[in-house]
Length: 279
Image 1: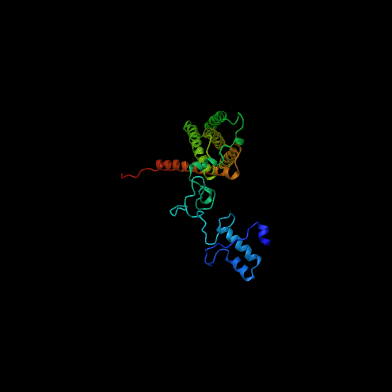
Image 2: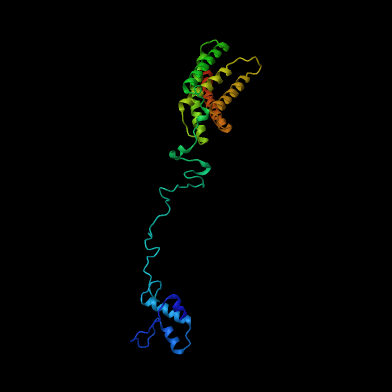
């Protein structure tokens, strides 16, 4: 037949002893007996007969494929809620891995990816070192003490200069705290605390030097405004951060400064108020 020649198949011979039963090649046998068999029937019978004899490339009817199932090794008790160690977990909020709503994070390990508060661009060679800035801040603080002593009109000449010295030291510390708090809100990593402290010493001393000037203007608020402006410009120049982050540092430092002033005022009011007593 044509199909047998193309595929190189041999015609199937019915096996003896079948008793006329139906065989895989029965379609071909019936076609031969009745004379109405077609080439398709012969080809089908040939291929099925080949499968019955175990020839490659064909499957016998009713045979079972012994390949393993896709779900044979599936663990019914597997927990897929944990993404695993190699997969970054996402917290509620849909942000970056490890971040919650508003981009905040409470994982100390993730803060290492934050940009530093003291950037390399803000460190000026030689002049920007902690030692040089510390010396400059010390000179400015002494200048502020001298200016306070010269412009002082109090009967106790030593008290105001000592207060200025005290404020310079204390508010350098509050400035460092303000920088740390601002860095947290700005998502920056706190680094170079020595350099931050030296910068704050310069800024606070500059503020005090201008604040205690006796400018001949009727209003006494101009010294405070000039001092605040010089402080803000100093933060902008020394830290070289975006304006809103500069405002965070200056605003936080101002709040801490005011809180300490309120405490001092409350102490003075309590001291000046005479204690009530019977007479």
